[in-house]
Each structure stands twice: as C-alpha cells, then as structure tokens.
Length: 216
Image (cartoon, rainbow, N blue to C red):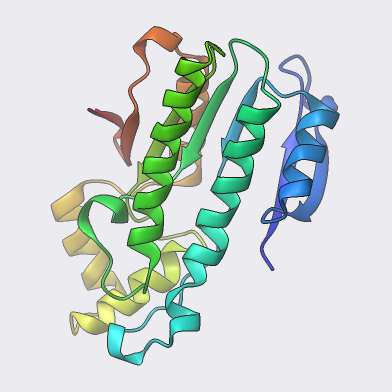
C-alpha cells in the first residue's frame, strides 16, 4: 500500500498547515481530500521506491511496483480533479522523473511508469481545455536527487553497475549533469512554477540542480 502525507495550507500562514495521512492509491481518498480542502494548487509527488536490479532479476511483481503505485496514484488524482472539478485558475503539478526521457535500466517499470504519468498529465490538460475548466496541468521530471529516498538507492545501484564508488559515480554524474538537485532547489522551483502566469507554463519541464527547463 502506498501512503502519502499531504499538507494543506492557505498562502497566508504556515500555522494553517493541516497534515493528512492517507493511502494515496485509493481513489476515494483523492475525492474526499479534494472536497474537504478545495485546493487551488496541487503538487502530486507520491510514489514507491523501485526495486533496483537488472531486468532478468526482476519478477513481474517487483517490475510492476511503479505501475501499481505511481501510475495508479496519478490516475486517481487526475481523474478526480477533472471530475470535481477543481476551481477555475487552479494549478496541478505532477512530479514524474527524468527517467521518462532517458530510461532507467535497473529500476524495472519505473521509467515507463513515469512516462505514462507525463502522458496522463497532458491528457488531463487536454480534457480541462475541452471542458473550459481553466485548470493548468504540467509535469515536472527531476534528474537524480542523490539525498532522497528514491535517489540514494538508485545512486548506489548504478555505482555498483559502473564498478565505481558512490563518490566516484556522483562525481561523474555531476560532470555530465551539473549540480545535483536538493530538496531546497526542488521546493523553490515548484513554488515558482505554481505562482507563474498560466499562459507561460509549458506542458512539461526537466528539473536539474540548475532549475527548471521547459520541454515542448
């Protein structure tokens, strides 16, 4: 079961934050929380930590974990945000992964699941446009964030695959991709995106340690 801690707050006060602990993959939870809090900004960033192993060492159960969690969560929440619908002018940011662009050979179905999240976000935007809902949907695809719960085991697995130490792997990664993402960088960039003029928002973005890059 995937779980999600969700914070709801007005923009006026941190004291207004009200945490909710719930099963993010339960469609009834999405409907209930959207009705209860009437959010105008939703950042969907829940998902599972994939099993890190080469394809031949996966079972279907381990391979499909991201499909049963990440894709399922995105489906329920995007569906409910359209069905409700959210208030006009609302913003929805779905956090996918840069694995959707370049693959991730040690994480089973993760890259495919993250690609599907990107497609689903685009589908939701199209449906919102067709229904004249005035809701903006966009997908954000972060590169490796080595200090996070998802990034740390991935870095360790790919370092072993490359016959490098973790430090050596991270050094080569920085040479290829620039500074790593930190929670602070990700948070600041998502806040800026949520506050941006809707007319300027791209369908999807790559997120690196240097910030957001629009993808068309």
